[in-house]
Image 1 (cartoon, rainbow, N blue to C red):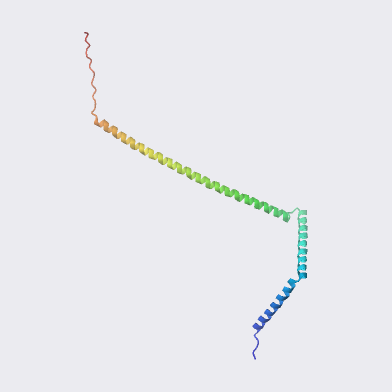
Image 2 (cartoon, rainbow, N blue to C red):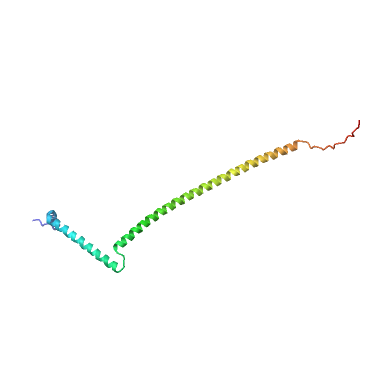
Length: 158
């Protein structure tokens, strides 16, 4: 004769219990009386909670302490202020980026203007050097002039 396995017996008993409980809960949850009772219970809990919160708010006001609604209102104001600050911060960052871009553009324009002036100066120096060379060559190629003194010729009266 074979001895029953306790683990298998336990599993079978659990499956049978689970099936029976599932069927029972299905019947309970499908019952209109149960659903009505649960609805009434939840309604009563909600009403009791509302009354409790009203009494707490009145007590807080009597002690000159902020109520839940006061804290919610302050939290909303803080949230709105945070949004405005973030918007301002974004605007400031955009302005800073624009300022940096304008400074870079102005600096680049100054560099280009200085380079252009330097190029003009170099071109003028080259022209001046050529003119000086031409002038020196012209002076060197002409013989030195001697000045002749003009002699006066006597006037004759005729």
